Image (cartoon, rainbow, N blue to C red; front, side, top):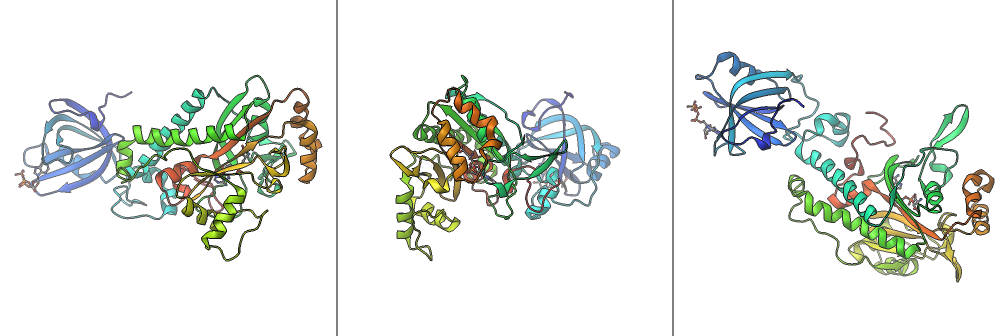
Length: 434
Ligand code: ATP
Ligand code: AMO
């Protein structure tokens, strides 16, 4: 590492070398200031024109905004400086100049639309509030990992190039794999089940999923981060407990460890950790409540999937996170187990945030014959899935799990308008680079 002090660590009395970007130059005539920004914050560099070496003043004050500079000098207390200290420079070096024509303004004085921001992510991330989103994302993923480890789960990674899809054929991205048709994986579903059926028993994965969703919405990505859980000897109620624990852990970690980032996002006064146990409504209760709100043009009937409007109406009615349980079997995938006493009802559940669905999960069909029947009912050829189904012949315990959309979690925790704000380089219908 180069000998360098972060701006936040520069204390009065120190001789330091700081390095970072020219955030702003304020020229007041006889005195001028360069505000230098690094990952830790900002610091004021003072140039007294008549008292300092001319070349040094020129180098500092001619540097264009966003150029990288390295400055050495003495740190002094200065109550009028933005951070209460300033550096009187002895040496200034322009390490990497910036073109004065910037495609977006990292000081945030000029607003940029999301598309311009995503096209110029490096500059966009120089904004404190944008950096804060990704610091929080990192903290959320750390906390989620830690909570899974407390639940005695093993972290796994599974293939992203696969032979078959699991979540519906229309949403697959086909690729060519040495002349054979293959796909980008939509979900680690089948792999995580295969591992939960081994002695490993409880697993989690945080990894990419790929969905060829045609529609362009503020909550869908074509490449998303899925936070998956699967546990042997678990039922759907256990999986719901784990999902609730993971979501709560994320909120707690942000609340405890991200106060500066919340401040940068103006959220410090309105950040609440969800309270108590998330209510569990059956699908039947859910449609009754939605119909009772009178928000929909047409009443829902048993068997209907919930539209975005229906989810919104219920979200407003409930007012916090909640589960929808006992979905009709016919609208849940083949791997979800039905209730033993009612084949029309599945053990599938969703965990909802008032704004949108966060999680899908359920207990899995672990009985080989029933699993094969499920494939056939869904119009899938079980032979294509033999690598998966055959393991159900060798002692597959009852098991359950879920998938949680990582970006949706971040988006709902921070109240972001658009899911793309929670990804560095989002993939959507229009965007394949950067
Ligand atoms: P000099 O300071 O060299 O006499 P000047 O007349 O341009 O030159 P000041 O009158 O000291 O400078 O200050 C001009 C403006 O800059 C004032 O509004 C003052 O509050 C502000 N200022 C001066 N020094 C600092 C500093 N170290 N940090 C922040 N603001 C400062
Ligand atoms: P599902 O398809 O419901 O379930 O996906 C689980 C969760 O992943 C998130 N998600 C998405 N986020 C952003 N963009 C997308 N295109 C996208 N698609 C899904 C959502 C969703 O709730 N195998 C099951 C999970 C399981 O049963 O374990 C599955 O994939 O937050």
